[in-house]
Amino acid sequence: MSRGALPSREAQQARGAAADDEDDTGRYAQGRGSHDRTEDAPEDEPIGWRDLWRASRARRRALRAEARRFTVRTRRRRWYWIGSLGAVVLLIVGTLAAAYSPLFSVREVTVVGADTVDADAIVSALDDQIGTPMPLVDHSAIRAAMLEFPLIETYQVESHPPHELVVRLVERTPVGAIATDAGYTVVDAAGVALSTREGKPEGQPVIDVGGGTSSEAFAAVGQVLRSLPSSLRKQVTEVTASSPHDVTITLGASNASVVWGNASDSALKAVVLEDVMADRPADGVQEYDVSSPNAVVVR
Image 1: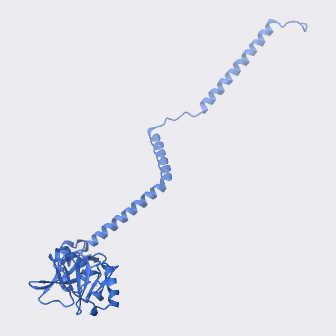
Image 2: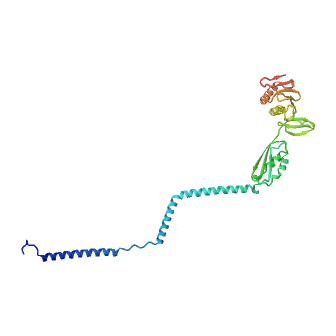
């Protein structure tokens, strides 16, 4: 057969069969490889409830650890404040417990400022406070006891732990004596009777006012006498006033009188009177009129 002739039918059929065999072989090999790979891959194992529980617990632990890491400063601050508050509460409770216990009870009463008043009598009057815890001292009972001493003008109670109670006094200052049926009653500027005796008390001027110690005239006299310096006051033997506007003072053995007028400007009047008396002693004067301190008249 020449080169340009077509192949015979038998040859074409043989070549087609060979090609089909090759296709089948390739498909078989490919299928075999896929099957082998499927057999080599491990199968997924089933997940049980224990695994889920362990995973959940691990997650919770991780979250708690993370939360603690971010809140450590806040927790430290909270415990600091709780500790501080607890310490303060313990301190307060301990202090109150000690204060109200016999550890801080009154065992001694001390009186300060008693010149005329009998200090021992005051201590005896406050004897019922002995053994009382300092915070429970009965100030009403102390006040009632102090009222029994008319010479006391004011007082102050101080607690000096652990056991001392101090009473500081301001005594009333007598300004003169008023003649009564019982004799002479020494009074202070407020008209409080301090003592009574038959004879005229030495060193106290006699006060003669209309209306008694509750009158405005007596109030003016008391104010005038308290404004006098000691150098003048010791020379006063008598003070009279029928009203608060006509206070008159009598001085010593010379019997010179001082027309004072009302109680206004008493401090200035006292200074002016001292200056005038330095130039014109009372021995040669009948009357000093200082009712107008800027225009003093001497007679």
